[in-house]
Structure formats: structure tokens, C-alpha cells
Amino acid sequence: MSQRLTRQQLQGLATVTAVPARTPMHFGVDRSFGLPTGFYVATVALYLAFIGVMAATFMNPELAIPMGIFAGFVLMAFGLAGYWVKMKPHNDAAAPTWGQLAARGIDTLNGRLTAGEAAVQVLTLPVLILCWGLAVAIIVAFT
Image (tube, rainbow, N blue to C red; front, side):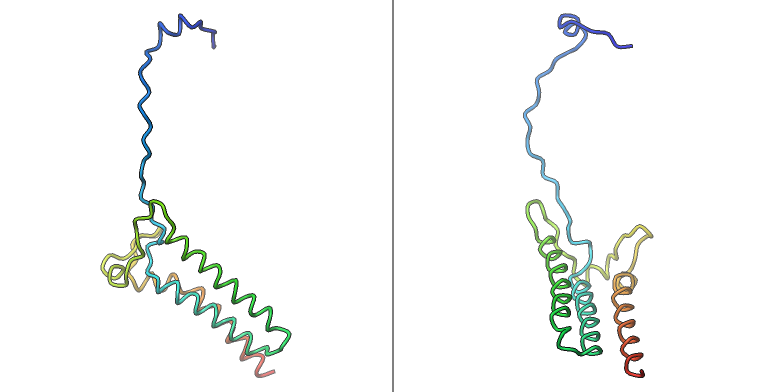
């Protein structure tokens, strides 16, 4: 159970030491995701290619504004991530180069990946989305 202690009882039980002065601590932050910039450029290009395929497939002047908005969202999303990688303070890490990724690989929750395996893992979804758009374009062309 708890009991109430007076100040005199508390001072008899506790030892009081001087509080050390607080100094700001510097922790390095890696915001680069451990991947070269080329992966992000390729991802943006594949998403924009999908939007381009859809725009060309369903060519309609009324879809110009929505397609422009979609492309703008893709560019803004990846542009914001690009600024986040360069954000200060305490951002000492830069995105690795292709050579560094090829030499070291990258650690993921599933284990270490080589540069080729990382490329496949990162670019699979954008490539599948582009293939889906191409499949839709072929279906529309034959109907």
C-alpha cells in the first residue's frame, strides 16, 4: 500500500544529486530509404506512363484536366518525398549511388537484397500498373 511521507522522512530516504545540465543531442537521421534516386525517377516515370496510356486510350478533351491533376499528384507526392530526403537538421546521409547499392545491397525485413533484387521489389508495382493500363488499352482498341 502507499503511505504519505513527510518532507523530513523523504529527505532521510532519498539522496538528492545535482541535475546535470541538458545538452542538445545530435542524432543522425537517414531519410534516403537506402535506395538510389534512380529508383524514384523510374517509379515516377512508370506512373506517368500509365497516366499517359490512359489519356491516349480514352482521348477526350474533357479528361485533360483530370489527367493533368493525376499527373500533378504523382509529381507532388514524389517531389515532397524528395524534399523530405534533403530536409535538415541532422540529415547526414545522402542517397546511395548505384555502385554503392551494387556493392553493399540493402537490408530489408526479409533479409539482404542485391541491387537487382531491390530493383525488382521496388519497381514491380509500377510495372504491373503500367501493364494493366496497356491491357486496358488493348481491350479498348479491339472493342
